[in-house]
Image (tube, rainbow, N blue to C red):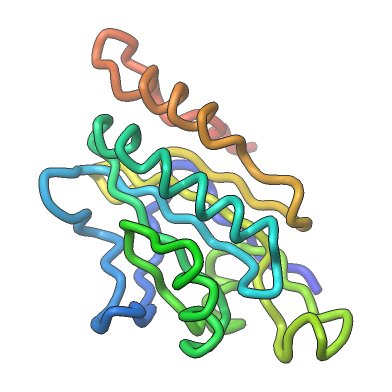
Length: 178
């Protein structure tokens, strides 16, 4: 299966994703005083690397927030499975669940079928990370086809610190079309 990948600089797609605590994730209006948003797509409860990544993300949340970046994460897991994993992580950021195949395709994510019912019972998204700037444009994008290929979060924080420093006048990279 192929999918159309999102491009750096394009407006982040309007998605309607349910939140574990009720309501919908808002990709256009970060919470509080934050003007940028980090969106992490994770594989789901069956993935111990995702649990570790979400835990690390939770530990580093204050560093993202210091840079004016709000954080959300989401997966294709149904609410019941998402709650089990999230109760272990206890994140201080919002969690979306029940990402559909169509929504995964809209985000340009790689999609996998489970290896067995012991893994999970439905197709799921492989990891993705998007940073949405104050103009709702994709500033940074990283998609992977495997659980062990995803950005190291401290590297993302360092990069965002550089990008968000007005003295650097750092543009959105990777926008050349030909």
